[in-house]
Image 1 (cartoon, one colour):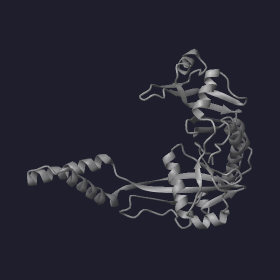
Image 2 (tube, rainbow, N blue to C red):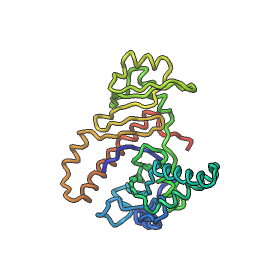
Image 3 (tube, rainbow, N blue to C red):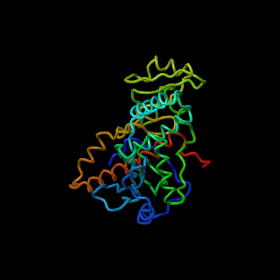
Image 4 (tube, one colour):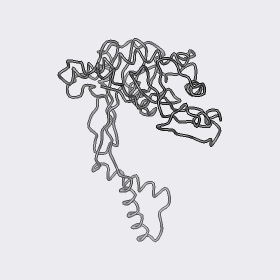
Length: 303
């Protein structure tokens, strides 16, 4: 169980539910198959999949949850084709082209007709609550998907007091200064990828990959006023990622030093492997995140 992205939230009040209490609350909205005319549904499923019996999986101070979304797939091209066919039939029969309102209603009727025959797809969104540090860690780089999961938690719990994790110093300012000074804090290594942007309206954007980010070419952009919006980096040769302006860690990758420790596990079953990986990942992040956040002045205090 290795997260590939980190969207981080912090609790504004301590999270006091036990795993058992949380499981009971989430059971009010379990995952289920879609009805024939239902376009989508999201509910809670077992983080351990078929090997699990609960809607939460607790390990130490961390509680894993998993939201499963199932949605019908209606190809837009198929809807358009049938809509044009129906419009042509009406035009031929009545000698006129239907207006915008009639076209919208006709399209809605077509979607309603096609819904029971549509294929569906499902996706899972994992997250875990770190009660010791007061974090919610969501495995996504999409703010929309993270907020959907949080909204589902609030629907089940009535209240879920979290806000996006923010630091005292803006990531854009700090990352830009690192490149401008050609110097980074101890333990941090700058990668070979970044995005630079002029903050003026319609300003230019430069994306660099497989480049020396301390080169004169990149320096010219930085000295010219462009700001670093995304920056690839590695922390103590243990975890690599691309940090963006919203403090979202994208394309998270645990390095060999961590994966070698995972390989030493004696886990035999899927559940045992899940526990071993979850313990190693959450433990690694518990060491890394506080130190990394400190590089940006610590957590924003006016929350």
